[in-house]
Length: 69
Image 1: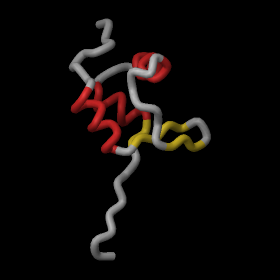
Image 2: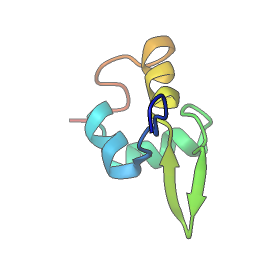
Image 3: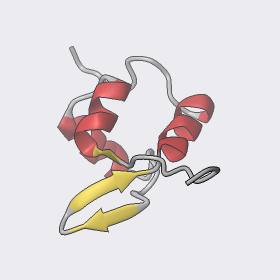
Image 4: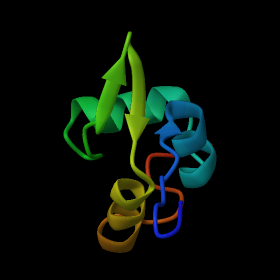
């Protein structure tokens, strides 16, 4: 199909790897409203559009944010 594009959704493991934070840090960021809510939840599995995560990085994220080690 020409002109048709589907962006893959990112799961929590993808977001953790991209942001270089732990799962507990991501959970804290979500609970505190410091990270965007998932674009989709399927049976407790959190999914984000790549654009959502990129927007967060571009506008809010500081490397090492939330890291304790």
